[in-house]
Structure formats: C-alpha cells, structure tokens
Length: 328
Image 1 (cartoon, rainbow, N blue to C red):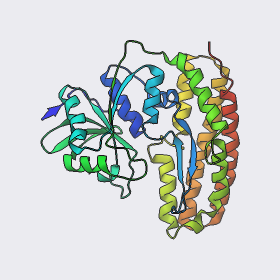
Image 2: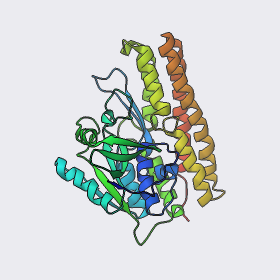
Image 3: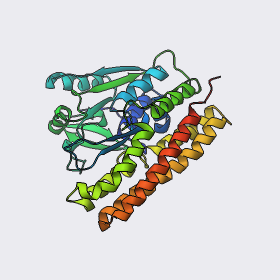
Image 4: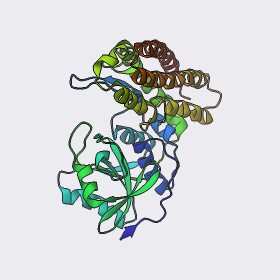
C-alpha cells in the first residue's frame, strides 16, 4: 500500500478544476476554482445538437483538459501530461508518481466508478489518485475521497466514446517563474470576450444562447420521456459540476476575485453586475425547463425561450464591456 498522507479534501465545484487544484495545493500553491476557470480562458457557451440526440448538449466551458492546459501555460506551471493505449503503461504512469509522493490527475469515464450513481457515460470526468493498494486506488473526486477498484479504474480510463482520451494522466510542478494573476487577467478576459462575441459557429457564444432560445420551445416534442429528460437537462445545467447557472456563477466569482487584483476597475465592476443578472436568468431557465417536463406544458418553454433571448443580450453586453479592459 502507498498513500500520500497530506491530501486534504476541500469543498469543490467542478471535477477538472478541483482535480488540478489538488495538484497545485500539493505544490504549495493556492488558486480558487473560479480563478482557474478565468485564467484558463475556458469560459464560454456551446449548444450542440446531433441528429441522434433527443435534447442538446449545453456547456459553459472549454473541452476536457484544455482548461488545465491553458491555465498552466498562462501561469507558468509545468505539466507532465501522458496518454497511452497500453493498459500496463497507463497504470505505471500513475504508480511511479504515487510512489514518489506525487498525486496524479486522470481523465476517465465516470460510468465505471463505484461512487458515481448515474447510469450514463461521461468520459470527460476527472479525478486525482493519491494512493493505491493491491486491489483499489484512492481517489479525490470533486471534493470527496473514495476507493475505486483497480479493475473499474482501468475500465473507466479505457472507455471509448464522446470526449474520451487515451488513458490521460497528468501531474503538475511549480516552475521557477510564476506569472502573477494581475498580469494575466486582462488578456485572458479579452480572449474570452472575443471568442464569445465572434464564435466560429452559431452554436457557440451569444449566438449559441440565441439558438437555444429558438429551439427550446420544441423540446417537449423531442422526447418520449419529457419529465425525466427535461429534468436531467436542467439538473446538469445547475448541478453537473457547473457551480450553478451553466458556469455563470463561477465566472461571476472569477470577475469578483479579479477585483482584488485590479481594484476599482470599472470594466470588471460592470461585468460583475451583468453576469450576476445572467446567472440568475440561467437558474430561472433551469427551473422553467423542470416545470415544462413535470407538467408537459409548452408555456414554461415559451417563458424559458424569452429568458434565454434576454440572457443572450445581457451576456453580449458584458463581453463587449470586458473587451475594453486595459492592461497596465
């Protein structure tokens, strides 16, 4: 048995940011999850609907691992990221670091984890391994610690499908030169704003929110199980590792925290106010979606559509504001 004994659980928001945050804490560096989201330029919006899907995928952040990768590039941390098709090598990529007292973050499919009670596959999930014995791995998962059988851990790492990686693992080391947040924030928020206002496709950014507003009125006709599927959709928007309001609560917290580094910044102050409104709108939208599923009544989706159109304009205004932030 090998256990890294100085691992301390903390209240967590998102699986990837909390997994990476644990690695940073092990290096003696403190970053909040909202700050990690902002400095990674990982905030946004996506509305993705394929023909085989009853309801769309709605997301508010960058694709798996991109958040960690860009955060470390911007802040100056060194990342040792590995992928492999070999099951033996995949475990060695974990074991060798644990034996040196270094925790290892993994991307895997949550479906196979004993403590994950959902019945669907999600291969964009992250945990951090901090120990193992002959039969189990000891993992930190979004604020809590669990034991996972080595057999199930291997299944989770080698599951195929949407968002899956090839048994991705990574560790983080503090480099000699760290870049202060106040030097990163202006450029990071400008890049977030530019991507949001000038998306490559109409399903991204504020145009994606408008697409959601257009399509949401038809959701009751898209599923034979509206109560379950609409509830699940709304629950993912609020509780699926988003921090609430499709990551809008996290982003608002990032903007608020940024004011400690750039005090009295009028651009940030205005954006905080606007994104607080947007976050409240997203929570209201999720509630309306649940009501539509529960009652099978279109009026709630019509109301949700109106809220989404309003939210698109609020977020567009906020991002136009953030685009004007200046560097010292």
